Length: 346
Image 1 (cartoon, rainbow, N blue to C red):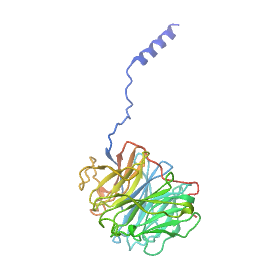
Image 2: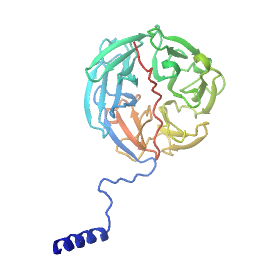
Image 3: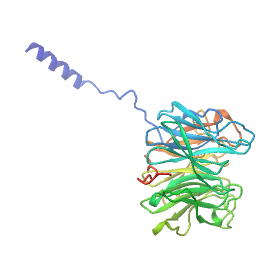
Image 4: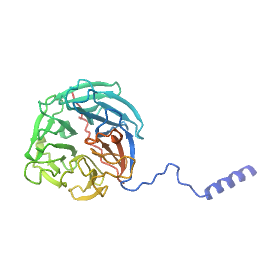
């Protein structure tokens, strides 16, 4: 009985004691920015892909002056660099780069390689690369999204075209073309399918169709109708001159977080209908985000929990110390990219 009373007394003391917050609790304010990881040589990351296996991947871009092949890097969710793979078969005497644009349902990475204008897959379990699709000469595949029927939709930075690779096919189709996608030096970038709205969101860095200043970028909405036919392109948002909107993520609220790779060096938050909510940092140009590394050609905004991962490419300055993945807290979780059961490539 004495032993039982002693135990009950100890339990009562513990219950009455104040409960301390867990040591790992980390309250962050919106837009708080931290360094997720530096990107090793050859640097110049673009899109960041968060895999269903919980790991993070990004590829690199190099100019024709570099004889180093592009690499695909893999990080853990806490930013620890785990592995990397050199991309085979590139034309190293040309501008060359690889975008980790998506993944298949079985987990293979979908890579867009620029020097050969092709789609490769990478099995991260075995390190095996396979070239599965080639685009016509002159195409510069940039971003990719799965869509209805297991088709893969790919933007073209150079041609003003959205390509469609039908499920089970190795032949890309010129699915949609418009003067609005014909850029002045800087072309079509991000693309995401929204299954609830049956449309694609597409970012365009510049446009020569006369609807706005050529230096203005846009966020477009492109409906996908029955049979996978494209609808009428609609402008949801027009950027400020020189913003160069690039990759983006979509939050649970429907808000769209777009990286501005141009002079602004900012992120912009838009509503689902394209109304501008906020820009971060508020002061453009400097990229001063409060972290050890400023925004320097931010190229994407990919959700990981309540943060977006931003690829810092430093395309103009070429500063290796700025070539990094940055972690920006936005206070809401994201909508995962559409990944149907038929998301496979032959």
